[in-house]
Image 1 (tube, rainbow, N blue to C red):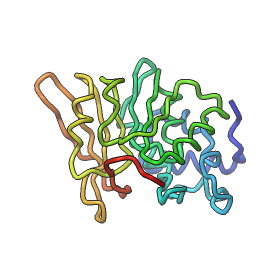
Image 2 (tube, one colour):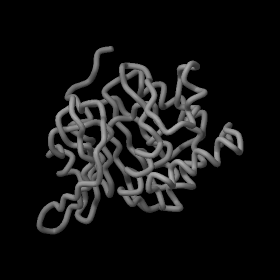
Image 3 (spheres, rainbow, N blue to C red):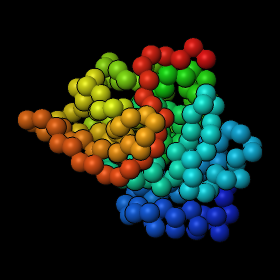
Image 4 (cartoon, helix red, strand yellow):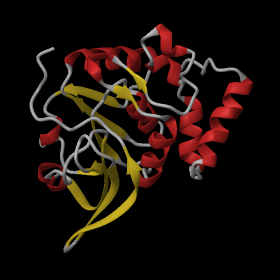
Amino acid sequence: MNAPSYTPEQKMQFLFALRSRGLTDARVLNAMEAVDRAQFVQDGVFKDRAYEDMPLPIACGQTISQPSVVGLMTQALDVSPRHHVLEIGTGSGYQGAILSHLARRVFTVDRHKRLVDDARATFEALDLRNITVVTADGSRGLPDQAPFDRIIVTAAAEDPPGPLLAQLKIGGIMVVPCGQAETVQTLVKVVRGEDGFDYTELRDVRFVPLLEGVSRD
């Protein structure tokens, strides 16, 4: 795998920003250190800002989330090396690449074929062989591959989507932003128990909305 291209100073500042915003899980920090965010920012104008803790624009009107939010969502997901993970909203592929360092298998879905093609090419260039990327309606999940140990949603739904809850294993965890698309949303952690679902609100976030269907762009 290609080594991250950031300088030692950028690396130190990047990891300090993550820790200062509450990221404490050593496995997640190591995964984020191993994944070079600049390789997921296609626009050269923004590559120089890849190591800053801020969201950046990508193709199809989407964004690559700020690293601290990616880290905190991943930390809340509590992924182990034996887990099969479903990601809804491939985007640039950055979140999926980090998950690939933590999980046994990652399935990631996006409604934009261009984003899927770009992410697949990046995964192949980085030799990340445990990721399957699919163009599909993320609101419906991937029932053919279910159930999943973990599900992460990187777009905001009004409530945790029923089809995704149904694809979560007993004992599984889902992390999803919930709320109206044009307002501040709440990041919610859902744990599926034998008798139902337990919901915990984690923090305020801002994500693009989770849309049904497959884009024609």
